[in-house]
Length: 293
Length: 236
Image 1 (cartoon, rainbow over the protein chains, first blue to last red):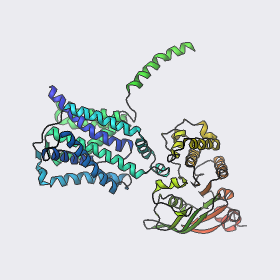
Image 2 (cartoon, chains in turn blue, yellow):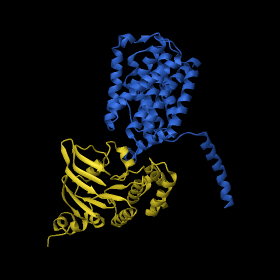
Image 3 (cartoon, rainbow over the protein chains, first blue to last red):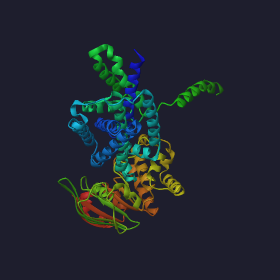
Image 4 (tube, chains in turn yellow, cyan):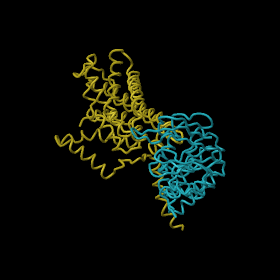
């Protein structure tokens, strides 16, 4: 395996991770499932590519532009659909994701279904890692803020949150918008890594992949999302040797984890180095205490 | 204090409340009794804007109530929902503090927290326990405590005795009387008609979405029709 190959896998993991981080806020912390986030990725990808290739914008500004466009569409979608309860909202996001793909299929300006080749390659491992670090810092701050606590309250007991005075609709909308911005930025990174865009890249399977990663990593855990994104993006590549059995093993792995750890890899907990050190120290101390007593 | 006139609620084709009029005066306990599906919970949910009304007016302190649920608590109306709905993964204390979500004055919040502990010593014993691990009765107490933490003028209690052992039911009703002594107005919805009427000042009987009887609670208890239908006494 060459470094170039490993670097490629890491970049793709990182690109997925940006979208997964946003989805983690929506699904893991607010309790709303979405099967349409590939749609937001698509908006971000096409908007960012449009900004760099047609408007000549700076790559990073274009990424933000893509994220912003996805966020605006997320706002509109949320306004229209967030009053729907549970399963109906999922169906609405599913419809949105597929509609987005079909609309892009028909916009000839962006190459339609044939795709849009020749997008400049600005994405590299360094900027993907930096964007992920920034993304994680912002996400953790949101989660630990008042906004994050309100979102968690909504996840736990929506009705109770409402009657104690939390504006449930507003916080659901915020959560959806932020997750759409993350997905949009992820799409922009993807466009400038592959160098080619086609609506087919943002099918339902992409949305489900993102949701699977969030659940696989553990709902309500940022570190779980990070581990999940790296493991599940790398897994098909690791399994490349077994050829046609590859996706069977991928599926089997996900099923295996869900049976043995239904709460996901991290199960709502965070991985913190300090905690582990504390635990080791307390274990070392434990026998000493016994001797004293 | 609370004035409801000609209230109508529809669930799709079902006409759940048909022209309900209710008055709650300050400092009273008003009990609404009725059988399953009579529309009792719907009535409370209409007051707290959880369900949309299809006609009529609800006025609180002379002003119509707002349409969004989260604005209600700020006015001084606090609902204790049916089935408790406590935050299972938060401690007892944090659940209570969530009840004071809209309030900023830390000293007053602390005062009310102490009042709730005085009212429910059982909660104080379990202050750091996760709410999901409490018994049904303790969860009911926690939900009521949380309702009080917003320092409401009126508290809406939805079936507080639901699924509790008789001894606990007695405790809960004693606590409701204690809450009244804290200068709170109480609107109580109950299936346990005898208990609900015996602590109330005014009673209403709701049947198939209509108020079929209203009056002084003591008189309602003595009413032979009510006794037969709701209090389980035989015709002699």
